[in-house]
Structures are given as structure tokens and as C-alpha cells.
Image (cartoon, rainbow, N blue to C red; front, top):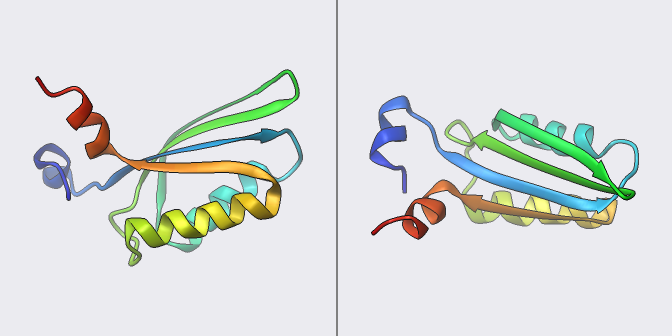
Length: 100
């Protein structure tokens, strides 16, 4: 599942998006869950727009012992508890979209 370029670097990149009504603790809750699962945040961007919290993250899951599906299930559950929508995609999805 790793791409050749990132396999050399030893990275397993995932893209995470979080959207919902703004409230305290969203960044802390998501980042804490990632940390506990051995997932490193490579890049993060967040903004509040018209009262809605929007965050995108690029994370490296190479050190996680969990499958992408398990990570997805758990993050979606964390999102439900906070009433925000969490989605996760592997970098290979975007690479396949841009292949000619």
C-alpha cells in the first residue's frame, strides 16, 4: 500500500479532514487520539468559517499498529462523540486520481 517514493522515506501518509460546529477541544481530541495510536502529524491547517470548524491534516501512520480501516473506524467514532464529521483517505487515492 505504500508508494515507492514514500516507502523510501518510510512514510504512510493519510489525509484527515474534520468539519463541524466550532467548539473547544476538537484539535486536542483528534491529535491526542492520533498520538496514542503512533500516528505523527506532518501538517495541519485549521480555520473557523461562519461558526464551523474546518481542519485538514496530513499524518504519517507508519508507526501505527492498526490498519487504515481500524484507524478510520476509531476516528469516525471520535468525531461522532464530538458531533463533527471526520474523514480519512490514503495518499494513494489522490495519486490514482492524478495518473494519466
